[in-house]
Length: 80
Image (spheres, rainbow, N blue to C red):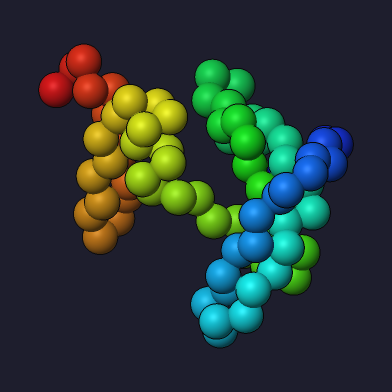
């Protein structure tokens, strides 16, 4: 999902599921869809999954997120 990584000073440590701390190696914009890009995505070496922070996503996109057993819905707050 990363085309190129930008190195920055003071990248954060990320706490992994097993409790270990891993230093992020870079930051980039990721295009999830042609109409949806997310800025400041961290590259965390050793993570085998792509994870999104729901609180960051709702603030960044100003949206609400609904989860059901079969799908996830992101809705613009102005359309509620």
